[in-house]
Length: 252
Image (cartoon, rainbow, N blue to C red):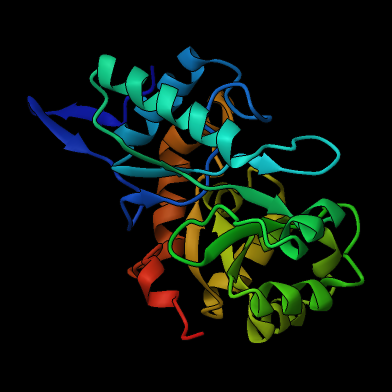
């Protein structure tokens, strides 16, 4: 599998592009969304994250009304099985699970029913919106999230092309209460030049304290292992500390 350690004068030298050891966004639980399809793939992806220097991974399977109506039971059951498999395979990754909530009508139903949401840490939830069109009720949804006592992270805002014509929208999202999380591969051009440019704007303007692999499959892992990509990721992240979830907590 992928090994991010190389021999150098008979010594192993770690090549770690990240300034954090916790990954807050991944799809590594088997068979419940568009990430790892089976346990063997899950274990290989987790091994890859470990080799990258990640020691704590928070799996965030999709919850999307039209596609993946994952429940806490489904997610936690997959987490338990994956932990057992990791222990058997002697993979020393600390594993946790939350979810990546699509801000759709199904999510609003969960929120309004006061169903406890799966959080990354305390009251922090990971959210996403459609890639195709900006929701016209995003401010209303955000208000409901905040009124329920949750703090939302918006995943990969640089990938929403409808914001590319006006980067100030990223400032607005931050100002109204979204914490922004940039995908590492966005910084490499993996998703295209426009996405890379938007990601750099977000980081250059100090709008994101969070970064994630958004790891789904071996192709993502191979891209993260590429030496040129590792160099770019390290360069654009700079010396800032990322993914300290306690640091973004706000008083209710």
